[in-house]
View 1: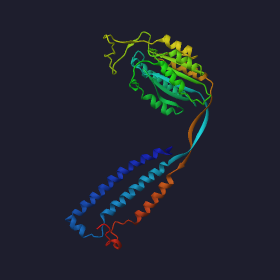
View 2: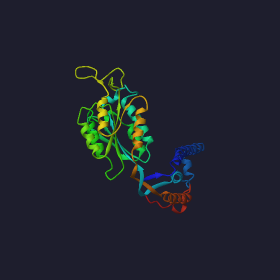
View 3: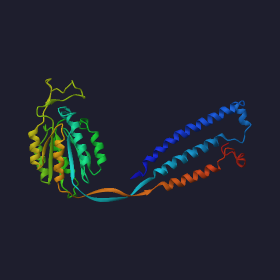
View 4: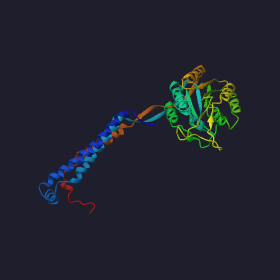
Length: 340
């Protein structure tokens, strides 16, 4: 694994374009000053010892030295030792409904956005635990394998939208089955599936999938999101255009609270109705906090090898070389024409 110990030092790279601009300005002013004395090609013939090319060589050497010096300050490092660290925690696999019905705004700002807000806060409250993410609609896909990398979890979470799953529908059973297979097989820690959905399951046997999970000592907690009164589904974020059925009627999507409660009951977990408050998040957090934490393993780089000495030697070599590059042509090698 590669990293910079002091990445903020890379801001000094902004010096480089300034140096380049100053050099171009300097060369332009020199040329302009020479033109004042007469015809430029004639003047250059009167100064046979002056080498314009070497002025460019010297500049690019200094330019490269500044670049290397900044990189040295940033201290590039390579991870040399991958260490397995044991921590006390649990494993949480989230199944998030991303079907079109989750775009309904009966929960502000939308059901899907509210779900992402809840999950973001849940990730912030995790400590030494592992979390994974599955998105589902008519089919289910792993968005983030089980991990203790919370930064990646929040990054993947922010990019979720209904277009991630090409097949529409609400295949809760497929999501539960996939989540059951996605936990770390060797871990003895307690495991739970967090299902966030409006409960409109039309695809498969959700309760059968939950029973299979409980047989493996996996709890299934459910957050039902949406209103039981129902609401239309906006198209492309419009507040005036809504999804219609084949007969031209506006589709009304409702929270199937009974289905959500049955899933939670069968899965030996809790059910909470997610609304515009934080009640559901608190209930879920309390349920997770009650779970018994045990040793879980995570891999991390514990030792880093410094790479800056290599850059320092290159920098020193260029500085020494630059010292011997003069603005004037070398008389000893003036008559040697390697490329003529």
